[in-house]
Image (cartoon, rainbow, N blue to C red; front, side, top):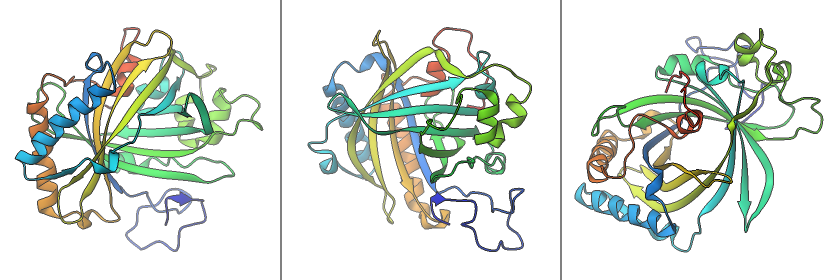
Length: 306
């Protein structure tokens, strides 16, 4: 089954496969993504991104990991606008869902179609896999099921996992009467039925805030045994006020089977991730994610599975 999916792509299931109600096999994790949330006020210019890259390079060298900045040479920061959508009382986020619309800009102007990203996040992999995120749309969509590696919420040096079951597709609202209505969302995302069926509230922009993301590629980390990860650093800030919310350093690996990632390569990644937290301790912000920073912007933070 490819990442570009339609409901009829799957072949006959194996006897031990877990299936969604329509007989489609459960999605499998194909991404390992490590993330460290950083203090937004640290980022005042493009040079700030490369200042953090120096920390990455120092830790990689000390841990015997090859960091190659050449793939990012001459690459300018990418600008994206992110709009989070939820009910007034945050029903989606409080139940582990994230719905956002994302726009990419080049030279100050939007390019291509906006993108819808729908996620279900949970610390338990089986729970995340059992939630069918497939949208009921005519066009193509892409499933991205990730294991996200994060620091512990309350101290540096540790590691925890969060499983993010995502679907992405281009946003084409022309044939939709009201894309913010609960009935529309339930029709497109049946998984939201139990959450939205008894509400009349339309979704709206979370905290009336549009987020501007500035993302800079840094290069690649080679953990060995074919485990090569592109890495980047970004900052999220509010449109208009230009308030720096948070930054983030991240690296990601895609694989077909978990067994494709060698044990020693995973150990090197783990050691690097822990050591980076110590080396970058003056940059790191614990107890939050980028999404949580947006939801908490006006106070009264909602509950979530983060």
